[in-house]
Length: 512
Image 1: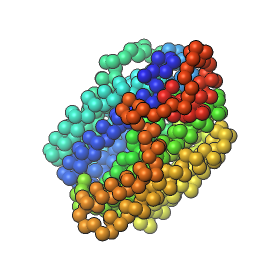
Image 2: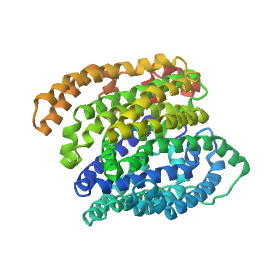
Image 3: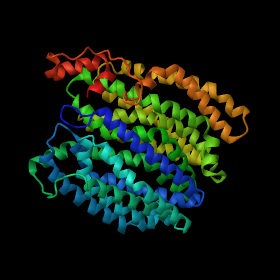
């Protein structure tokens, strides 16, 4: 299904993106369950530090270039050569700095054993710069089917390599080489199926457009990467690689519900929201739909992980990781609301308010670092997890509201409308499933019965919204409230189409 421009529709793109992330996540969970029964928490902690360094370095090298290309209000043929030149140069410099500074970085972060993995991950930084234009164009065109195919091709060989190297005793390096192989295969698959500008060159006018949007966006992203990885830096100084490994596993599990949503939101958020940036009413409708559907999925799954955290960890990873269950209790709250914050971040980016996004990310970092230091000293990894959740709920979400209230009309009413029913349904499901953890002894029974009871209660309250998520081609036909298209509608203007979307956002999404 395509929109009027011939690009895949928003719903089509989100569907492929969700499928892509779901398949990748399931395979990574299975491979991780195997590998984490082999490697030690210290090895996993060392790789986590290397991955944190990679995330910050690649965020600094990106300069907001791929995101600039994804904006549909800019000419891709005009800015792509400039983006290609800047991305290649910045990634080369960043990769070299990461490679040669690996020993210093690993020691400074309290995990000297991470140095080799940091050097290996520098290869990924270089590849990300080379792929900035292809990935930006893919995001712009909502080409998530192609990305799914590319990732599907890479999953098996990268995870076979991971398990093989882990059995061979490579520890943190096994994870790093697996990442390199996976990214290389994805890059080759994307390049082999599309035509992209192959001659980097800098145009001054294009450079001004790229810098005006890209630098604030890159700054916000860089701070965002620092926010997501500051905990590993702080814990490296206070509780060492073992503690990092315990915490990182809990963080990974807490991200299961939001990883699918986060990838979908980040992939299509800027193209979708920028499309309606100049129509406040339409932007309100699209934002409400995005927040509602994010909460519809993230809230119940995060609640399940909170409730069944101990049996989930023991069943999948084994008793040596049982300390992660306590940490997961706090991070499951963070995971649910972090997904909502991603919608807000993409709303600011899609409406070209990256300066406000940068300020919020700065505020987040300034508040989070002392909170995590206090938490680490008070309760180790558990204290860091509690600090993450508290800062997000008390400081960051209100800051997003302040930044968006002049852009989106009736924002408080929008949030109440979008979040109230998923919240009530999630609490009801949590209350119904709670006794399963008190009276059942077997871990498998705890997980299965809690999932069934909670799922039935949640489904009973939210069944209309859940059914609305199923595409018509895979589910029962749902009656449309939009009137049939007649001859006048065949050339309907954009305002007329938006008015129908406002009347029924779900119908408007299908029309797109």
